[in-house]
Length: 273
Image 1: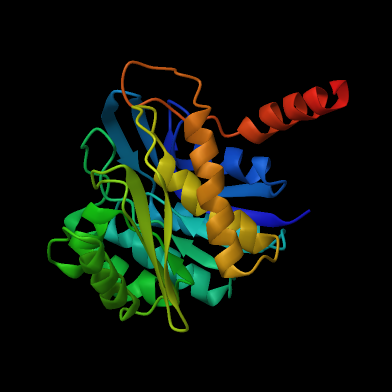
Image 2: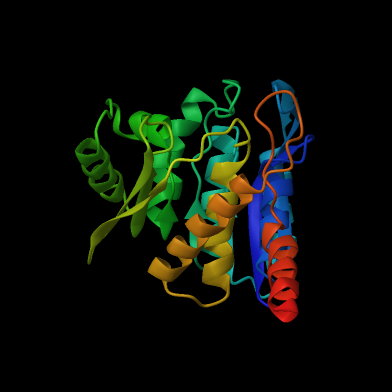
């Protein structure tokens, strides 16, 4: 069984962060390990409080996992502070952990800030240069480039600028735009392409960014090419949104195990024909 490591914050509501990542790894048949960077008090309506873990303890968690497991891919989510960002970057480099996917989590769905201002600089200078893939949404990409993004062409330009910071591949996600289609822009040295699909009109989107990046990491841990891992991750997230359980009064969680629930039903129907 392939093994992946998530380095992220804990979501008490179970819809994002460590909880979403481990569910996603499991849904892909990947064994999930973790290093917790922060503990949050949150549900579908928002974050009410959070506290960062000491950077030394985050580093120790990563070292403990890497010292005993053959990690095939790593993803980062909420890193909270500059000290944690720097510790994660240094530890990933020292341990030569492969296939780093960086989800530059900055703000929760409800608007609560999850990354200190000082940490943004560390993210740019220390972590992004070590990343294979970076997956910012529109607001995160705007922070990383220090400018606004209003069109798909500006998404492409932003992706190129972010790739100039060092990552191999940049995916600027267009979920914050309006319109009937949802467009993500993928920028790599050898090609640029768009991932397009119908926009799903729903409030149940909590943890989509965490889930997307975790799904990519799972695909990489399984040895899939980058383009295949990215496309499958997007299809997986779309299905998880479509089959969301409908929990909570705010931005509800996804159904991370929708394939396990849907495929047996389809197979049963096929057998009855």
